[in-house]
Length: 128
Image (cartoon, rainbow, N blue to C red):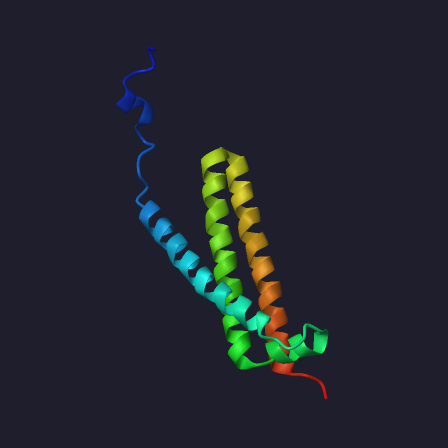
């Protein structure tokens, strides 16, 4: 053995007091994802047709665009939180920092592109 006591081996690697906050955010986003995805599946199933114009008209409604934006935001944040845990658990050193930066940029880019698309349809309306 010769590497000191068990306490000495783990010294400095204790709680950072951030686990409960992270855990709580994962649970909140999981709950919101559940309700928003349920709404989304029911709303899509109730559409008369699935052609481009029908879906575009559907998304142009404020009653659809707002929950869709909330759904995208919640899913992307939940995705980021989950992958952050994986990166923190399995990557070490500078590779961890690089992956965290890439993860943040990727999720922000995906969320921005999706939200921009929804808002563009919602604000421009359906051409006549």
